[in-house]
Every structure is written in C-alpha cells, then in structure tokens.
Length: 397
Image 1 (tube, rainbow, N blue to C red):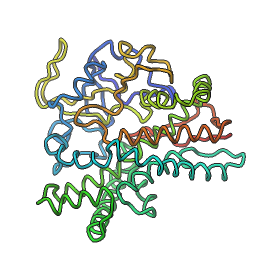
Image 2: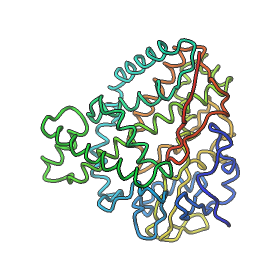
Image 3: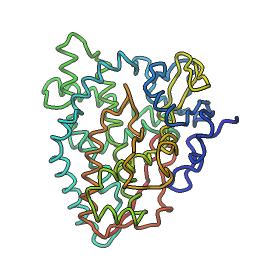
C-alpha cells in the first residue's frame, strides 16, 4: 500500500478528513509525515486502545532511525529527557498532584470568575460588531488558568503565547525562528525558577523546586527546567483550540445548539462529543517508536517501526460509536481516546473539562443570539502547526 500524506486534509475547518470514513478497512497503513519520513498508522479503536497502554511503544522518538514530525523542529526530542517510565513516572506523580480531581474542583470558582470577566469584556466591546472568540475567550482563559497553577506573572502571558506558537510549529516558522524562541524561553524559565527558589509560592513550579532541593535530587535541575517549559507550552493551547472549535461546531449545528439551550444539563455530554471530534487536529503528535515486536490480531508491528496510534480514526470507529459521522451531543456511549490512555493519559484532562464546560455554558447563557459571523466552511485552520488551531472564529449576537 502506498503511503498517504498525513495529516489528512479537511474538507473544511469543522469537518473530519474524508479518509477517516473508511480508514479502518486496513488495521495499519503507511503514512508520510510533514518531515518526509514514513510511519505506520494504526486505525482501529481496539488496536489503538491496546497500543496506548503497551510499554513497548516508546515516546522517545529521538532514537536513530525514528521518524520525525517536522524537518525544522525537533519538538519533544531531547536526549537528556526520557519520556518513558520509570523516569517519566517520577515527575508525573508530582505533576498529578497539581491536577488532581479535588484540586481542579477547588479551581471552579476561580475559572467561573475568569470566564465572567472575559464575557463582560466581550459584551462591552462587541457592540454589534463581530468579535474573535479566540481572542475574547478561548485563548485568554486557559492561559490565565495554567499560569496561575504554575505561578507565572500575569505580565508574561503574551510572550508565552508567542513562544508556544514557535515550539509547536511544523512548518509555520523557520528553524532559526524556532531556535531563537526556544533560547528566549529557556532563559525565561531559568529566571523564573530562580525567582521561585528565592520566594516560593503555592504553585506547581515552587513544588517542583522543593522536590529538587529537598529530596536529594529526586528531580534533576535539567528535568525541572524541561518540565516547567513543557507545562507552559502545552498547558493551554490544546484547551484553547478545543474551546473555540467546540463552540464553532455547536453554532454550525443549529439543531444540536437548540437542544443544548433547551437543557443545559447536556453540557458535559456536548463537551465530550466535541472532544471525540478531536478539534485540536490530527494524531501526528501521537508518534511513537516500537522497541520490540508487537503482535496484534493477525499481524505484527516490527521493532524499530515508527507508529501513530490514530486517535482521530479510533474516535470515528463505527464498531464502537453509533453513526460516528454524526455530531450528536446526546451521545451517551462516548469512550473517546482524545486524552489518550495509560502512562501518558493527559494530566490536565480534568482541568480541561472544567474549563470547557464552564466556558461553553456561560457563553451560551450570556449571549442567547450567538452565531458565527461567517459560514462555518469559511473558517480557516492554522497551517504548518502541530495543533490545527483556528486562525480566527468571528462571532456576533
């Protein structure tokens, strides 16, 4: 079978790629990544679910011969960091404390207050003119939330967003621009760590510093800096993209929007359905390396292969989801894999869900006439980025 270019193209910004409709006829298919390298894409829900919990599938994609996502950007490839257990597990335990269900729930009043404040500004500046939902709500909310958790000063939010865009570039920025942004961010992290060491607070970075300084090097200095950077980089943009896209998806399906407005108890189900739609983009970021042969149902993934457990395909598997091609907020059987599984299950899943639910319901309640300013098929995705965010989402009410 010839390798297909991946990520697949979307018919329009809110539609899933046409290839996902019949991709599962083959359990595995070769794909060509933006770097030009080839990987094996595993397509079926049961196989993807199994692989996500298989310790023979490594996230250490910096190995010789492993496929790369991008030619210009060696994102998530750092030879000094092992992203697999047991090394990964040490730090994950610490980070999970900050994202526990109980701690996330304690953030509910803070998140609700932020949302209300942002909607107040949105209402004041709208005045009959279209407003970009990205700039009014989708990005400011998760940036402020993750920075509060980590202890990042408010004044530094804007430069954080610029660094994130460079780090998550597949082809959007040049190698030189990416390198310069990373150098600037590394220097910023070093200064931030030292400031927290001098004046610790009730935040995650201060907690990680205490582990580093008090527990006899349980967290190496370089690991401390690397995890601070990672959490800052990926701690908000996925939620921002999902929030803006989820609202746009609802607005482009009037019957689903009407059902939600008639019964706001459907908000959690609606959020889960937008998550199943995997609005943040393809599964290219799930790229893994196979350390030993993996025998599947009648076929084998050989050691040394680069593999993508295709969550976007699994979420459309017709053997698991009834009429998966339909956007249905009343769907009750919705065990999507958007947050992954196992050792690499998204630590921020509970926090993301909290923000998505509060922001979606509050926005729709505040603006009962909310609608897209342009036809849904005129929305545009960000080209050349790991996360296929929306360039803008103009709305009016």
